[in-house]
Length: 460
Image 1: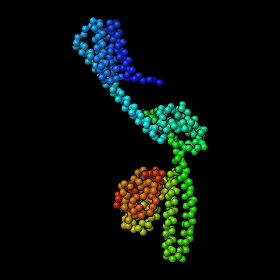
Image 2: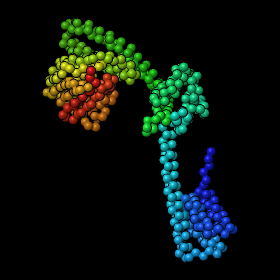
Image 3: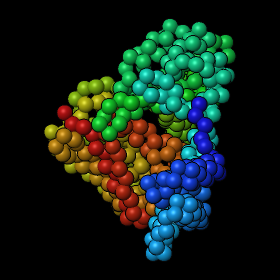
Image 4: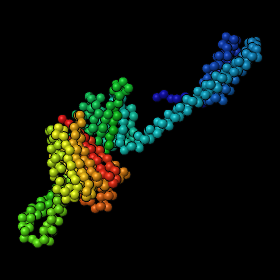
């Protein structure tokens, strides 16, 4: 390990060197041969090591030493020559001191930047390490050091060797070994993996990404490691919740729906009040059933368990079916419903799920459009993509709420004030389904004038 020479020690060595040079000049009568330039290296070292004042003083002192050595050799330079030597050596010392000050300032700035970067890396939740092209660790933050100690990783060897050392502690050691070897054999590829410790239930998620230079040459790899035990526990709880909802809510709802059908067959024997109560029960059951289905679908989406068909879907047909499904409702609200669809646009996807996207958008549009307003659906082909636009003349969405409309369970102030029924899940589900079809969804709205939602899907 190299040790840095302190500036003070360097200056003392330079002073000693200058005195030795003076002694050599006097002892060998070589003042004229060596000249004042013999002191220049020592002056420069002192200036760089200590600063401008010391450099200037060293330059003047060196000029004085040369004049003294010249006097012993019976050399008598003119006054102007002495002045020039003082100026030259003084400027050399002062200039070296300025350079030294700049270097020290740059070093302090670099050290401050490095310390800040180190503090930032150490303050993160993730363990982060940087390795070179051979897998040797160049940089590691405190979280990954603590995780390595906690997991029992060795402190020597490449990153892959250290990771392979803990394979037997994992729930699936063979799969883990295979993945580590694949990462080592594929230096230019990113990877994401999860592994669980035996017996403890602790789960870790690792991510790696290659680091390349400006020419695209592989020079190393970034490794990150995070403990996700709490996330996995939440996922297990969510799965348990989904199972509970499926059994404890869907089963009685099925019974309620069945008995409602039986009562509807005999509603002629009920009075007017009875038929009214029956209609209220039917609508409440439908709302509860829809809520359960939405909750289940959100859970499936988050768990990435929604299976989509991949087949050409005629978007005009999907739009027509959705529009006809809500036309009676729109007529009851006296909302004009229009469809303008080109027959050509087709998308690769799941017709049922795309219909659900249209159903959710139309449901929102009609709910938030007052009597006498209009809702339009437009389907167009646009080169390699197809667009579905649902536009209404409803109450619109305030600008400060538009960034939240695709969040789960979000409901606008207007919805609460007007007591518009809903769960706040429709647009969140819609965006997730559009994303899974490789499309995008955009919303434009102006309060008091209406909303326009545009879904763009890859066409086939």
